[in-house]
Amino acid sequence: MPSQPVAFFTQANTFSELWPAVRSRISAVRRNGKYSHGLAVAELEKALAEYTGAKYAIGVNSGTDALVVALRAAGLEPGDEVIVPAFSFIASASAVVLAGGRPVFADIEDDGYGLDPVAVAAARTTRTRFVMPVHLFCQPADLAGLNAVAMAHGLTVIEDSAEAIGMRYAGRHAGLSGAAGVLSFFPTKTLGALGDAGAVLTDDPRIAETADALRHHGRFGRTLANFPAISTATGLPGLNSKMDDIQAAVLLTKLPRLEQDIARRAKLAGLYTDQLTGVPGIHKLPSVGHRGAEVRGVWYVYVIEVDRRDELAAYLAARGIGTEVYYPVPLHLQPCFAGHHHRAGDFPNAERACLRTLALPLYPDLTEHEVTHVCRTILEFAERTR
Ligand SMILES: *Cc1c(COP(=O)(O)O)cnc(C)c1O
Image (cartoon, rainbow, N blue to C red):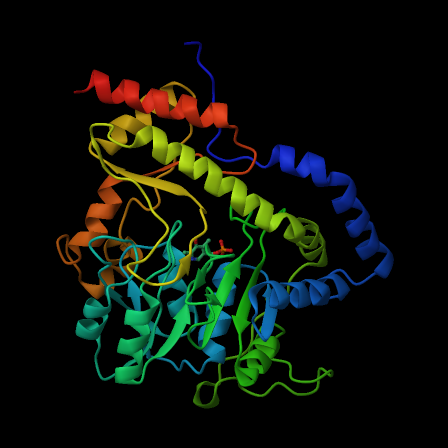
C-alpha cells in the first residue's frame, strides 16, 4: 500500500468552506469598531447559553482562565484545597494554583478516565472546599457519584468541561451539574476558534456577576472608579481575560455546524471501533456511556489503550500517521508539583492511563478512507509484533 499521510488534526477544509461567512462576520467586527469584549462576544454568550441551557455564559480568553475565574467566582480563598484527578491536562491543576488554591490529587476510576468518587472521599481534609470532575476524551465523569460525595461533605463542584461541549449527563449539558463549568475553544477542541478563547457556564447569578467582573480587572459596573477586592477576604485583584471579538465572530460562524460536526465525529468513531475490535494488543476501545447514567457523549478524541504504545506511535509516525499522547505524565508526578511529594505508584489507574493511552486522528475533515487506512496500519503493526 502506498504511504498515505494522515494528520493528527486539521480543520483546513472546514475553514475554507466557512471562510466567506467568517470573513463577513469579522468585517462586521471591524465596522463596529469594538474589538474586545464587544457585540460579537455578547452575541456568542447568548448563543452559548441557548445551546447549553446555561443561564449564563461568560466569554473569557481561554479554558484555563475560565477555570481560574470559575473557582474564584465560586468563592475559592487562598489555601483552599481542590480535589482534581491525577490524570488530566495540566490546566485542571494549574488553574487551582493560579486561583490561589491548592490542588489535591485523587485517582481516576479503573474503567474510565474520570475522578473516582471513593478516591475523592479518601483525599478530603478539613481544608478541602472544592472538587473538580474532568470530562476527558468522549465520556463524562461519574457526576452522580461525585455530586453525592460533594453533597455529603459540603464541597462545591466546579466541572472542567473544557473538552465537553455538547456532552450531556442526566439531561444537563456538561458543566451545569455543580456550581459552574467551563468551555475551551482552543483550535483542536470540538468547537475550535482561530486562536485561544474560553467560557464559564453557570446558572448562579452571583457567580456570573463575579465572573463578569473578574475577567475585566475586577470591575463592577461601567466605570473605572471602583475595584473592590474580589472574593471577600483575599484582596486578590481581577484578571484581564476578556474574549476577542474576532474569536467570537469565528465561533458564531461555526456554532450552527456543531451538531453536524458532533455527528460526523460519532460516525468516524464508530468506524474505528468496528475495525479495531479484536485487534491483538489493544486493551481497550473507548465508549461514550457511563454505567447506567443517561449520557450523551461527544467524541472529542478517540483514545485507545494498547501495549507497546510508544512503539505503535512510532510505527504510525514513520508512515505519516499522526497520533498524540494525552497525557504522558500524571499530574502528581509533574515537576511543578514536586512539592506535593508524590511517588510513582500513588495513583495506579492514572499512571496506567499515562502509559497505555494513544489518541488517533478524529475530526470532521477526516475521511472514512483515512480511518480505514489508520486501522489497517494498526493491524499491520499488531501482526508484525505478535
Ligand atoms: C483544553 C483543556 C483545558 C484548557 O483549555 P485552554 O483553552 O487550552 O486553556 C483545560 N482542561 C482540559 C481537560 C482541557 O482539555
